[in-house]
Amino acid sequence: MTNATPNKNIGCVVTECKFHAGNEDYCTLNQIHVSKHEATAKSIECTDCASFEAEQKSSCCSR
Image 1 (cartoon, rainbow, N blue to C red):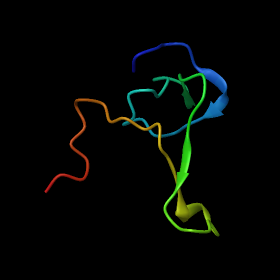
Image 2: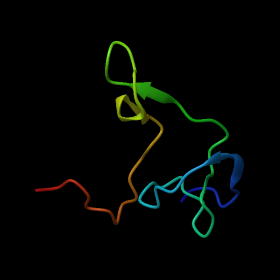
Image 3: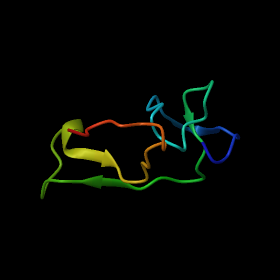
């Protein structure tokens, strides 16, 4: 977490992200970028928060 001020306009439950507000389920960024990985996003599974950056302590997705 780089900034301790939660942005009440951006809810977030991804505690592994360095921008998560810690004790509150909000992002600390002023704005986020949402990306899609399909030509046409037809469901939530086709989108991602492209502003996500993993906390250093996280080892998610490593083999």
